Length: 225
Length: 169
Image 1 (cartoon, chains in turn green, brown):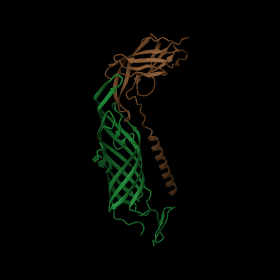
Image 2 (tube, one colour; image 1 turned 180 degrees about the horizontal axis):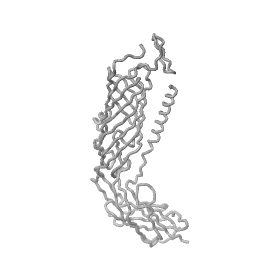
Image 3 (cartoon, helix red, strand yellow; image 1 turned 90 degrees about the vertical axis):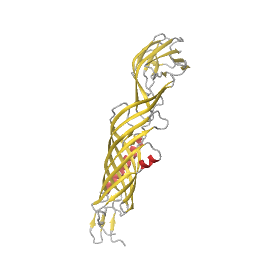
Image 4 (cartoon, chains in turn orange, brown; image 1 turned 120 degrees about the horizontal axis):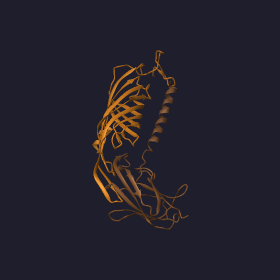
């Protein structure tokens, strides 16, 4: 028999001594670092663009997780049926935001969260191997290029994610991201298509698959289970 | 507090749904690729009215196989005149008959002098040429007047040139 009751409506936990505490977990729950695996895996099976990304977050009350994500994007990609190769020079990006663990007062080996992100990046890119034709005039040009363009982009993301404990501090996570560009500048004749940290700008949905390690301080729960 | 968080969660769900819905519509691209001047045909009058062509023939001067772009086509009130990406000027011959403007079939020419710029706007459109028409001229054997509406030629369906014919009456 458990020596406590949890009044879910009020999020108040009552210990066996009759004390009430708001949170099951202590104020500070450690730091988690992570790496996105999806893009490297996709590259192994032939994808010609992607990100290498790391993240770091801190946990407070197992509820709030301020997070910083950073990485580098690249592309050397000729889409099927297209008349160009899109080359994105390795470009850095950053995201800051917060994850909110919906099940913060559960003693489960993981978190289920919604999140917000603000991302920004600077990119250098160019288009090469361009071929253009005038069908009526029966002429074609090939080997054209649009030289380097640059762009600064800002965007936001909404996340729904899950992170589960595998062994000790080792965790694995999945997240679905809904992304929307706030603004991007353009210097050059090509509009940015693959935005570092955002992906293809015409693909508002993204998925991340991460491996994480949590460095947690040795602390006790606010109650004994 | 819990109620407030519940509202926040609902709001997040609604925002997420709205963003997904609104973001997925950003894929339009006209299939014409590089821009082509669209010529609208009008009958003179106050105001001018769009003329349905009974029979029109259009071809480019110097086309390597003497291919005709529109050959005795009827029922259209506008037509495209593609620019040659290997040159900086093109000339089109228009032979037009209409019950509205008379039965004559005299030939007129439209001449474009232009610059081109390779651009990339959307993945769906690919790399395309955008054109700026620096000079536009025409003959008046059959048509009365022509105007360059805009020097910028994009791949949308707005008219670049309007040509006007006199009506029978």
